[in-house]
Image (cartoon, rainbow over all chains, first blue to last red):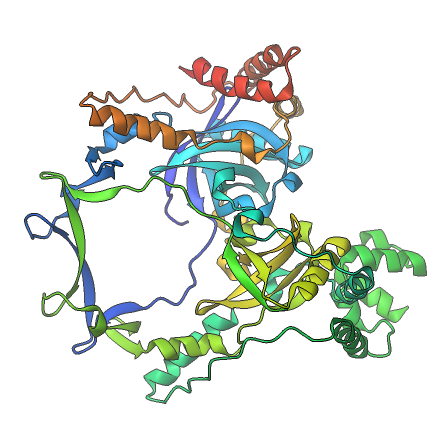
Length: 304
Length: 265
């Protein structure tokens, strides 16, 4: 199990569940080290006191806040703790997850209960009621030197915690000058909707691989073998299509051609959301459809 | 559709500066060569990928960019999916998309069509030098692009070995807990939540600037991990019920937060 980032307690009414916070993501990024070009030695970042010009060890580093007049106020860890002595994740409300715009979600974590029976039972009780009521808890807590608004919700057999942005950390379209955009013409929108519906499928995260990571690792391998790396030209920014209606029609035609004779090829069915497959199965009277998995529905429909 | 990209979020975290504790002098970060022990100017620094301990493959900026260039500057929408099927765990950083001059019409059509079809476009896009998986939504009259995590970057709850209770949750406990959840139900209104910590830290800073002594408050005990779960649920529910008597939901929630803290102390 990864190392906990924080430990404290999750508080729900008067019930306190001792928990640890773990990241719910793993870093698979390709990381580079800074090297000194001439001797390929690692670059080390050293912290140097600007007054004494000597390196400062970790334990001598303090934290300062600069006031508007330039005065710097130094705070110790203990003094900073005075701003938040609780060390708890306080649940304030339960809301419907669909009411939360994803723009608010920041980083996902898991909460893991302490291993004593009381903590484990309270943890699973909360997980179970959130699951059955379809509600997520909105809570807040302080991690390092920032307070977070968080969404606490069930994920599988665990409780996840996602840090959220505060409303004043989110920009509206008006804030970036995106207002007064022209309205679209209905005929064009209808064409585009037809195109979009033809390309609508279920969200299956496994279908998307990080191709960039793979290409970057391949480039590193080539370079290691001493091969020259081909540098592609800077791609041109595409221009807006002059005739939008014609482009939409051509796209729809291309999509239809891709789908074969317009019938229900297996490949086409596989792309459909399960909801739509169920509707088609109902229309065709496929028996036992409500118990079928998506793959079984595809198979039944392509046979019928 | 030619578009421009604008960040849709900005962190308002309090920034502290690193200081040398004994003389309160600011610290400077210096890049030093680990072999020579001398400071290295920026133009002598290259990027290396470690293939074995101490062995590096050096790549130029252009070579690193070569991995991204294949797709060019287009956001390729590969699929359209119902937005509620995307677990929030996949969302990373939000941006607004604005039309470039001359592209307003096409932008408007895509926006209106996404809204009408009730779906989200999923595709790929090179942001700076990295190709990202992105979701494009129609929100608040504009198009928003959210970068997303790839499936292998997301940890599955099954990998965590969450302990299971020896004695499973009873129906009575579940009913009580459910009533407690109901008593705290609310609509999500982001504007109701302010970052109060930011203000509290600034208060501490100002007090210290005036030469006041900061007395850290006693740490609050976490208790022993809810020994008698049923009794605690009953007490919490009693409190929540009393508070909600006649009051609007909004004020109930604020009241609940405060009295909860008092009760624990």
